[in-house]
Image 1 (cartoon, rainbow, N blue to C red):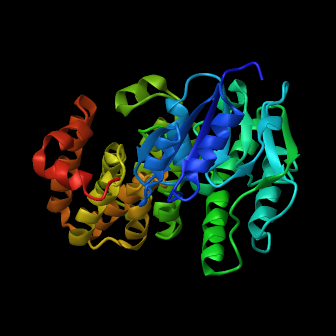
Image 2 (cartoon, rainbow, N blue to C red):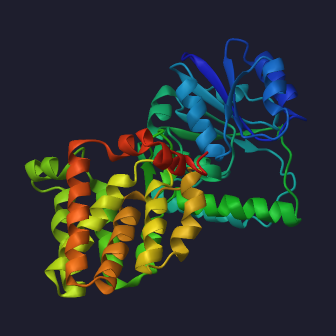
Length: 402
């Protein structure tokens, strides 16, 4: 391969094997830099990788895809070789001219379960990209510079390889599988093995759905639509409007930019969410409360956990449901998933609807005034920056975040 090559290895608690893996990679590819993304290991994985000659990124525990995306941002331009931390075998045949994504297919199977996750992954790649892979889950693969640009940042967790193949095939890049005599530590048919494959199946399904890019440049599954599904038709309608913004929004931010932009998904929300509030409450105050509360939570959803914490603080006095928010909070805080506009708008709508039920007429207009002031402040300055500058709010904002 004519392009410069960088090797990326995502590792977690692999001190027993990481040194040998890095040394083998450096012998096999002497001109390549080896970057090990240590995904929150609790052992000496990072130390042993450094001793073996790798550049090590010490990361909080987030997931395989997030670790690979962080390592890719640290890598110089050129092609990439991805390799699992526990692999042994020769990978140089993957460096083939004229192929954009070359995936290693194991010549011999070792361990594993009943093949459910592999069959689901194979079917999803075929349905979404028209490519029928033999090894949809293989972590051993080479990406050309063109494939790297198209596939990174990769999907979160163990879904990264499946979405990588989908993105490359959809882009019309040359995708190939090469059979190689490789070995790795396979999971067995025990509790730990089934739990691992369960997480792999979950991440694979999420990776094939809608994804968003967070403030750190990680590509995470958008899961906020779940709030709409579980909280009635009005909240579902607001979540659908937010979901349209997640999928098709442009670069416009704030009321003024959307008004200047005309036909944008933001304008659709600006009109549609208060309309949903009006239909649901049959009150102008309800329309304003739902619209302004949805916008307020959306303005806060710029850092992990921020919008959910604000919702949970307000949900108690307003007697709003908290179940889904509590379930989603750990995933949002650890940057394993994102609310997106669907989730933040739906949370705000829930607060607005419950405000109508809890407040009298005068109380509603006080709440409308407070939310309008918050919206005006958000148009003039960054609410996130204001929160971070306020000591008590800043500590609460950072609580639980990786």
